Length: 111
Length: 116
Image 1 (cartoon, chains in turn green, brown):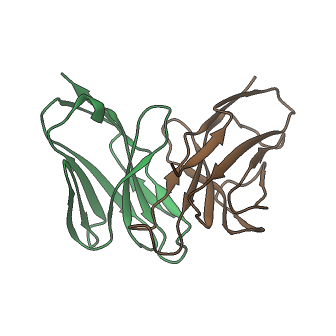
Image 2: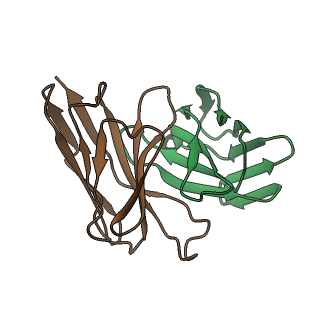
Image 3: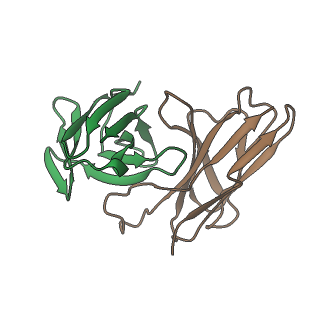
């Protein structure tokens, strides 16, 4: 089976840095994706990792270690608008149409 | 602007009724998907379609049906056979031609179905 684990909820302060972890145990792997989802809205794509290492996009960075089955999303200079759920998803190695999603981490940013 | 449009945004259904959720995209994507989102759970795949007139069951297809008569459209019917249909339904599409950065999913705004 496929197992994607994320913390359920986190709280951080405006201006701070927060790291959201994702661990996965899947039968195959072809990339890990992070999405942001505000309550009641569509998830939007944030980042993608397929090779080990860090990918940086502005205030957001994502890291992958395939040997450890581990990724994290790093958010810097937190803003109130960053309050949202963050979804981790692993794409199936053999069927690019299959993505296995974690249950999401709800991030609360407080002033 | 290109995107995915889902309708209706909110829908109420009585038990025993079938309902159809609309999904239209103008991104020229070949692949389209339906997911179900429940509190505390990850998105679960209901059906997907890689090409017109073809679709495949996902992990939780029972009680649902789809059609793909046009590239732009992928409607989902929630039938009376679905035992627990109250949920948030998300439609998505994906480029399969390598034009996206990573082949990521693009999502619609969602349809919230409540069974009374």
